[in-house]
Amino acid sequence: MIMDGYISYLDYKTYYRIAGPASSRKTPLLLLHGGPGSTHNYFEVLDRLAEEDGRQLISYDQIGCGNSYLDGHPELWNMETWIGELKTVRKALNLKELYLLGQSWGGMLLLEYMCRHKHDGVKGIVLSSTLPSSRLWGEEQARMIRQLPSETQEIIRDATARNDYSTPAYQAAEAWYMELHASGKPSPDAPECLTRPKRLGKESYEAGWGPNEFTPMGTLKDYDVTELLPGIAVPALVISGGNDLCTPYIAKTMYDGIPNARWELFRDCRHCCFVEDTERYIRVLKEWMNH
Image (cartoon, rainbow, N blue to C red; front, side, top):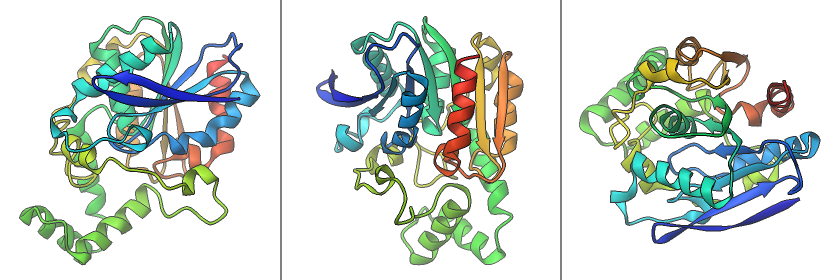
């Protein structure tokens, strides 16, 4: 069963989607997508979890992308806006109790919420290929870039020094890096949600994060909750891939910092473990939430 609609936020609309039975007595799982400026689409591969577990899975397109698309408002793209939206969605959908899952940037949003805001009713959190610190993320991307061929490193260094990412050589280097550690073009037989056209929030990504994954210079550049992780009192499930932008070092930083944490390493996956090993991801989530 799929339900969707819109929630008023600021002077705009936030799109939400609910998979699973409305009559379920199980605690729902709210999914926070990456970006900033991606969409909920890829989370639809988890719909089977709602069916198998009899639990509602709720996702939404964060303001600035997808069915909540908006641009021409660079003043909006900051943590305050996205935290306010999360609180608004939770209140509008009456999510008094819930599990939270954040992937990539969505996990940053989740950790900021857990560490610096009132979050009564959150029963557990899933940190999927995410990060506790923009600085740490940038350092780890720089380390992985140093493992690329020297000519590719030089192309990236030159673009960064000139703050010009428009050359074909740089764009090819970035695309290769992202294919190694994030994702590639979906295959023709991939689930429809992965091939469906979507409106990415380019403005919100560049203003919030920066020009690429390895240069955090937007409004989120000073994000760092590493020292606050020990204060998270709910169970946490850390998930990362062996070839992920979220390196094992980043994942271990979260695992070590949160008192009641479990870490699942998907050795053969990149940045979207739930897409590349959906079967295991659903199995792990189901076991963890029903433990």
